[in-house]
Amino acid sequence: MASLSEIYIKAEVLDLILKTVRKKELKGVGITINISDKSNAYGSNVSAHISQSKEDREAKKEKFLVGFGKVFWTDGSIVKGEKPQGETPQTFHASNDDDLPF
Image (tube, rainbow, N blue to C red):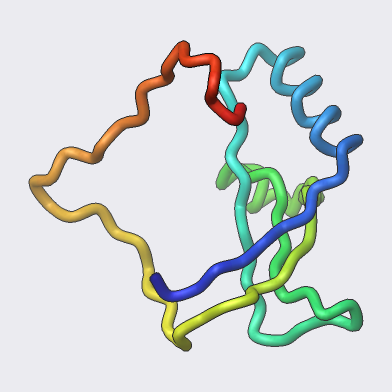
């Protein structure tokens, strides 16, 4: 692991995201995380926004900002994530257990 970060998302933003996902009948939403080399005046160096399509980026559409945060631990190295060739990724299977946290 190369770093750990946290992001704070306000409840009203979560509500708006969920409302939009339901209205558009989406299965979910992608979130793009940006980690900057410099902190802002509040000590944040991580931001998150709803992922955009290539067309949206090329049209310079405004990003929907989700939240801000900070890197709180790093070993000084972050590498690009790449899928290993020939390996099948593990999948998460939902459980009906009542003791799940969410």
